[in-house]
Length: 568
Ligand code: GCB
Image 1: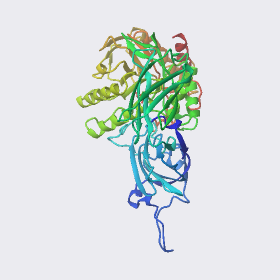
Image 2 (image 1 turned 180 degrees about the vertical axis):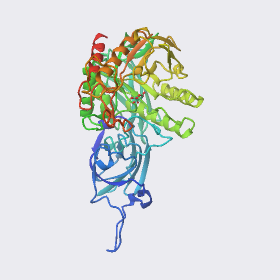
Image 3 (image 1 turned 135 degrees about the horizontal axis):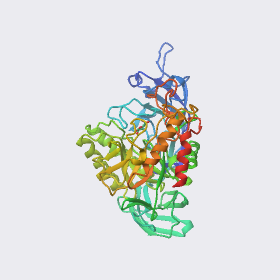
Image 4 (image 1 turned 135 degrees about the vertical axis):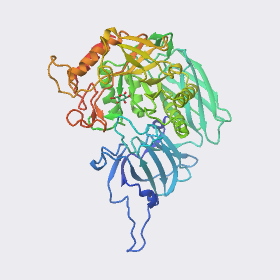
């Protein structure tokens, strides 16, 4: 079910009672049954009542100091009353739970979900009862070898019910999904579809865009699907003119209102073209973290905080690393005129030989695309980051995933982020078996930080496997602790702002040598929490590659990047 926030919702956000279960014994004790005692001498060794509470949405790690490092189980409970109107259907919707969720209603399991960054829902029309209902969610953020991401990653593994929870009431047959975007290559033709779900699948469907005086009528077939195709003289969405239209999607039994922008993104020759004009992506990488609070970001306010810094830097694109961020991020970006690069957490060490992993990737891709397929801000689907180009399993799996993605959405660009290039004698040899499948070649490189320069940056040479494809430098940078300055005389010392600044100055010189460069994105906007970053003086549990400290202080490199983007 897409567009959850714009439906008839009742929020279940707020304080939830929790049981901390670091050993995982709750499963054996069947906590979801909430056993009650009869005799005074009976006892049950758990209780949701009288224990701690946690805020939903929100990660658990940042809410109690005991949970800072927890990668394990927390049980959540919320009681609610709801009387469902006659002939209606009721769903319980989760924006995201990291990582595994088992959901119980009134002692009965109603479903499970795997994956920390995509929404899911279960129908509870026949399960809800009059009076008080008890909803229990077992949340487990233990790392899994066959998880997405797998075992190793460079960000804090915030667990919990990290995004909104709603009850959603719909008509007996409701609009489940729709795609209303411009046809690939066109600036005026919309090509899409609507899907209704329920007993009355054949319905009259109406699309209205009041500002354009547009009313389009169609009909869904016996499978609930209606195709649509119409044209209009749209004012196109772009970073300079982030124009959105109110769009009303009406079936006989349901109505949804959305705000939709229309734009066209494509690769023409070796250039990326937005609405017919070449565009250079002025990007920045962002993790889904509120830097001031040191917690998982989820709200509109969090989104505004992060994105307004991207705007101040002069960006027109945000790479939402390394997993689909919350819906507020994507929608705020759309309003603020920022293009979005959305990514799957197919990150570094993935068990491609495990068929379970392939099914998980497939499902997660579908969840990511369906949530955001109507968001014009999203221009790039990135399906992986830095997976090792050494086995056919990996390339076959990701080639297959690319094919599925194209079938789901033919209107956006698709990429895979790689770091398989060789760098020697100041020359890059850029090769990866995935490039064949990608619209743009995305390269992460940390010359000047992890890898020393082997010549003058302005003399670097590039040999790229597909010389006709646009190239995007999706990560570069280095670490510096804000305030750790020593004057320009001594640039060559790690952790110093001058050193980071020098990396940026050199990188910008090198960018001039890259053929078909279509954009860059520094790693990254804010310093962020990552427990593997253990230097006790300079890092203290933070990856310090931010252009801003976690308090929002601008490092010297910020100004270099800001200037570069102004000049572009
Ligand atoms: C990378 C990864 C990113 C890391 C970064 C780093 O290549 O894609 O997730 O955080 O390097 O700081 O090392």
